[in-house]
Image (cartoon, rainbow, N blue to C red):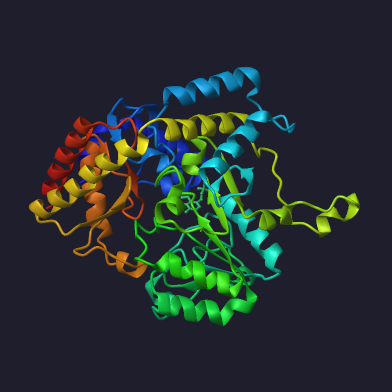
Length: 449
Ligand code: PMP
């Protein structure tokens, strides 16, 4: 099924040969490694990307999430350009644009009383975990099985693993995602099964005295979209409060994607801390972590003795924190989200897209289940919608990849060729584009059938 795409992408193929000489897999991030080779970008505009061979693709990958307004949205481009003219490079002197974007995030997120900026979701979760450890004096953290919280060592636990290594379903093992992660780190992470209240409570109570935080995505989205069961977040909020465990919602994916108030606004649950990236930076490298003022105060060293300050506070620093160009892009994006009917547009389009995909698969006789929340969703090659990460594993990866290749060759990117990534609608999408995408999807289902 790769043949059509292969024939259309000779220039990408030759770039891939060059790229493989300088970088592992020929890509800059492991999640970009479309097999046997990816196509390389020529241009991007609105809902579309164009590869170096000039092929056009209707893009629902949207940069793995940031592109809620589509590519190169005029307000964002204008703001970025004027920031570059004023001062686009980092100065390490505080810039007022950073205050503006932090005020904007805070005003859209009532649970965030104080926050700090960072450059990626990975940094944001790393620092949020450090703050929670500093505040509680405890070392352990708890994560749901299958949950992604970035690429640092603490977060790369229980993301995924070989099926044999997982342990019992209601008492999962903590398995490192890949090699190179010290045992000392693995030993500080506790895994629990998402959506299983009984097991979650037993495991958290058992480790409560050693736990600094629970960190989780409000909608699991990095093992494919798995929505929370009714009441699960309320239960987890009450339990963590009772046990004095800091509850961190990793809203890197869901933040400003599931509404102007993010997932916490949508579900009406208030975490102690939150991490943001992706949409918050409007496609530029901006991330943030923040929450209750007493927690964020861990970062603030007592002023009296400068020599002792590092001993008494949780360190957070970074040359590029509050980068002015990223702040400009983030601010412009968040303002558009507040001022324009973005969610009223992208969510009905998503409903049409995701429901339409389910119908198309059913009509073609392909076993597939679509699952979505708001404007993000996943197509699992499974006959029933999964509720746990373990169930997602029964999905047929090769069938998805074949279908994805066929759709890409016809000009639509339903995410990337890994079915556990999500795909998104964006503000530049139109009904006609959704019609086209569904036609292509239908044809692709028939071809793989
Ligand atoms: N947390 C979640 C929930 C994510 O989805 C991601 C990225 N997919 C991250 C953290 C890490 O963000 P980044 O890739 O910007 O480091």
